[in-house]
Every structure is written in structure tokens, then in C-alpha cells.
Image (cartoon, rainbow, N blue to C red):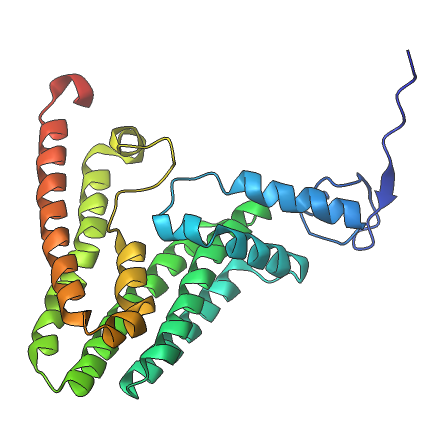
Amino acid sequence: MKPKKPEKKLECPECGQICNLGKYNNHESYSMLSYYGWLMRYKDIRKEDNGIEPFVHHLFKPVIHLLVWIFASINVTPNQISFLSLIMGIFCAYFFLLGSLVFGALFCLLRYLFDAVDGLVGRVKKTTSKFGAYLDNYIGLWCDFILIISFCICMTYLDKSLVWLYLMLPLFFFMLLHFIESLMVVKIIGIDKYKSVKPQTKYRIVEPLNTSDCLFIVFILSPLWYYLDLMLWIVSVIISLLILKQIFWFVYYKNKLEDKRWMN
């Protein structure tokens, strides 16, 4: 048998400690030890991104992983990325209010990418925190609110129709209702049982028409729908499907909460 080659080790330029090539350092930083180390870390990013995510997350997964790789290498914190997401959301609302669907959709896409990156950077760099999770959801809620308002004002101006002002509240309410409903169930039964009751698929995709998917369909694809003169029809269908989805979740949670075998 050939003797095993000794594992190559390098001295970390940041902390001066000896660490295995391609492995995490003790300070859990992403110093550039070698090109081989960078490749190993990119594989670690893909391994860490193994949660149940929206369909749009899987659609942009290569871009998300690349952004995580970049932000991790320059030591940007997850909270800073969350604030970048907020800035992109403000720019998106600004262009929507100017009547520019194209630039609004572009910044809405950037806002989503940064929103998807911040948590993954925290998990990869082992810097997650409860405040970071709170900040991420808090910023996301405000971004969704201002995007829906600015988008409906934009469509009111472009279509010369007040029907978009009437659609503003239902669109915001039904997009976020399941999020609020999930918090209520977690408060009643606890996070552990909630994770066990959530239906999962082998493709690790959350339920259809979640908030991220709706934002993608309505806002990011808005220039296409407007060009095809299908915007009002698309939004009406989305709201109708969201109502049906809420009926499904109400019946689903009702059966689970009344199931004594599951509750025990």
C-alpha cells in the first residue's frame, strides 16, 4: 500500500493559525488561502443551501451561490446584505412611481437576490443570529409593502384605471396572510411540531404561490405582462389562486390541530 500523503496545511494570513487547506478557519472567515480552497468553499456553499426554498430560489440558484461566494470573500455581514436588499427595494419603488416597469423589475430582482443571499451567507460563515433573522423578515415585510403600493400606483398611471388602487389591499393581504398564519400555528404548537407538519416534496420546494413566487410573477415579469396586455388578468388570477390556497391551508391546519394523535 502506498503511504498516505500528509494533508497540506497553510498558515492563515488573518489569524496566523495553521489550518487545513480548503477547510474553515478557526475564526470562521473566508480568507483566500489558495484557488483550491476557494473551490472547496464554493462546494460548501452548495451543500449549505439544502433547505426548502421557493421555486424562484431554485431558478436563480447559480446566481445566488455566486453572490454568496463574492460577499463571503469580502467579509460583508448578512445584516449589511439585508440593508442592501432594502436599498434595492427603495430603488424599485422609486422607478415604479416614475412609471418605469423595466427598471422597477430590474431592481426588484436585485432586491430578491440580496434577500436570498443574506441568510445563506450567515449559515455558510456561521454568523447567524436571532436579530439577523428578525431584521431579514422585518425588512422583507416593509419592502413588500412599499413595492405593492408603488406598483399599483404605477399601473394606475399607465392604465388610467382606478381598479389597481382597489387591488392594492387584497394583493398585499393575501400574499402575506400565510406568513402570518404560520406564525400563529408556531405560537400554538411550537416550532418543532410545525416543521414536522409542513408538507415537503422531494424537490425541496415550498408550497406554490408563496410570497417570493408572487413577487417574481407580478413584479419582476411585469414588463412582459404589460407588453402583452395581460397585467390585470395575471394579477386577478394570482389573487384568486391565493384565496384558494388560504382555504386549503385553513382546512389543512384545522385537521392537524384536531388530530389528537399528532398533537400528542
